[in-house]
Image (tube, rainbow, N blue to C red; front, side):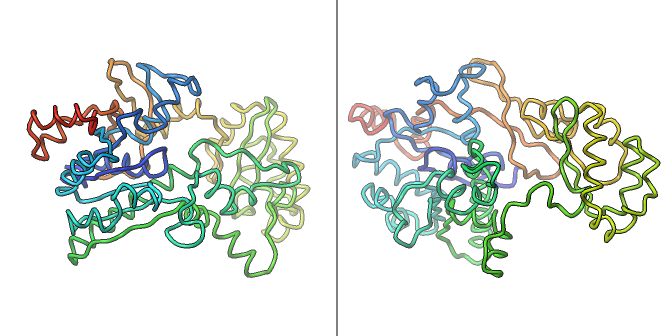
Length: 403
């Protein structure tokens, strides 16, 4: 059995941050019912049809698939009384209610804590927000590029004179790990309920998650009264903790914190055994004092070899290093393959496409993924399981309460 088999989650959420939590819970075995509006569903469904992103094999929309795989889609119009009652009926047997809706939307739709707890007092209520449940911006929306990347200081910490506008954020850079954090919080709340019989209201915001990611820089800057600037490559005190460019314009990252220990082996592997006993790099103190000379030596060495040559020469070195890889290259990384970190998922038409699994594995087993549902694909089945008969389901369809 998967660890969360038998757990039911009702998700009223869109985009990536909060839905990603539902996808993780589904990988762990939970039944996740994604509640979507009949008029188009999750807005990310429209990214392919509008031409903003290309469709993958079998028409797969990767912006929908990654944060929604393994779920069931139930299309309900929550603005109608009949639709709202159908949601309440589903909540009666649920363990978790997961939402990204802002407070004013939750109030208007009558899906706030007191509304859902009225039909299920034991349900765990989970809110994923931009800026947190309190304060002047509690009801202001927030995507990860704003609340996580910009406001929480992550972009500032990565910016520097060489990039005055800051580096662009990769897609879902804060959303996906933030969703993983929500999933972990839900698991803890489930354990608390089982152990002590107490249910929880769980809050995770993109702002708080961004600050957690950026915590060392935030704490240092507040301790010492000034912003810790991004460290330029030339200012790193250990030449073996730096990145180097090869002749074919690729990068190798060295992370050998005990530089003096690894200098002889590393420099020998790179073809300069004559420098293995160089006194300038024999101790941590001397390595720091001669960091510029060490970096110049390594710059010259790496610039004389290709990316593949550098990887081959460093392959047996005990110190930590890594090639700076692209997303395309990761599919061929032997560690990724051996651990099943990329799963091949079958589309509704039978074609396959790749998705990245969540990073948590149980019992040394790779996570198995299934595709994201089509809009409303499971509406009828979910309502039947909740006690509706076919005649009632037809009436709800005719009224526009469900799809």
